[in-house]
Length: 107
Length: 122
Figure 1: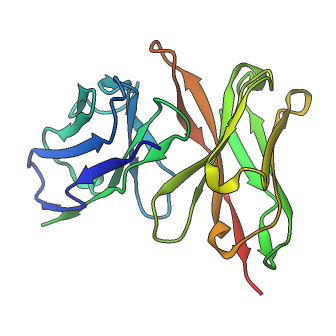
Figure 2 (figure 1 turned 90 degrees about the vertical axis):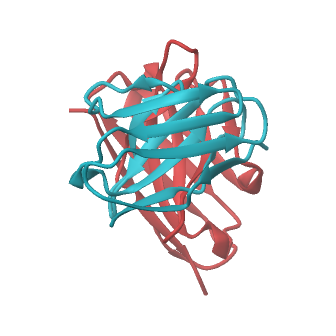
């Protein structure tokens, strides 16, 4: 099974900060990777798919990059509504697996 | 409005069974892969199973193979998950999710239901 390792697992940041979250895959997964945002009590919300494609309606401050085994999610200027937990998910092969998550909290 | 509504969860003893249902509306159900994802309290999501729109292909995470069965009824716009031989570690909120096709040939989970809770305890 492909393992996804996210770093950091916890991040404290201020409004306006640039934030970068990394997701490393245990095997090459091309660009078959998605990023989700989850707020407490809510379901995960798809932000980015195919590693770098911004889902329609998602603010442009979110961006994704990477291929192979290393991927990043960047928030260019953190907004109050962005404080949440972020997960990566690979779709290279079965079983699909999620990363362990990165919780972004207010500094 | 695209909507997914799960039902069928509950408190079950270890070794018991349940059938979860997911009612879909607002889109052409038969055109989409559908998935089940579960999330235990305080944990991240875990992909459980998926099924193709025409039911010709399905897949499962290893930990549920032989115990869980995913199925669908396109005439009723409904997705199901039959879960048998339940274990404590199966306790979670179970979400159904639609998987939309992307240009890269993969199917990304883009719409999620709020979930139904399964608790396995004696």
